[in-house]
Length: 87
Image 1: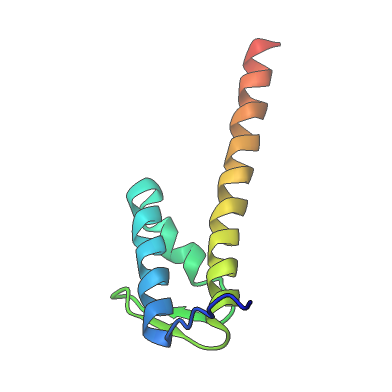
Image 2: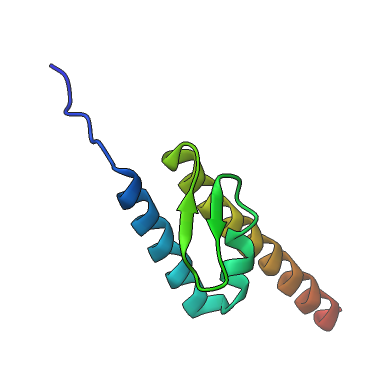
């Protein structure tokens, strides 16, 4: 028995990327767009319009990875600052 294959269109990938970026913008402001522009296969213009080139799944994985990397680094920085205050 095969599970049904979920087909996602390019427009749906763009909508998902847009939603992810917008949600991150609520937390980190314009930095959300700066991070998105670093993702291979994803172009975001100054108005926030998105163009996706390549595999949508890979682009979304890269986008989420950028934000995860950013927040992980921020968390380490905060922990280091707290450690220095406690010493």
